[in-house]
Length: 77
Image (cartoon, rainbow, N blue to C red; front, side, top):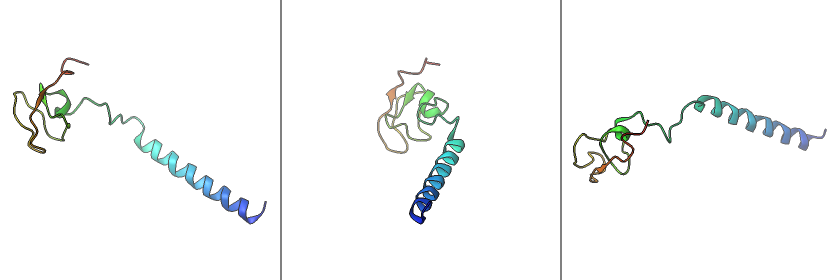
């Protein structure tokens, strides 16, 4: 194996190792669809799902100042 092939193999191994580590750290975290936070399960939610938003009554988001909308997914499990 010449030097170029060894370098390519080393870079490929490093790339695979880094990607594998990232997958292991994030495995089990379904951040896009988790409905655990108040901004997802409240009766009224911010259309931008701002962190810390959501309310039991209509109003505006304290983060982005948009009007809350009725949560259509409120009764989903």
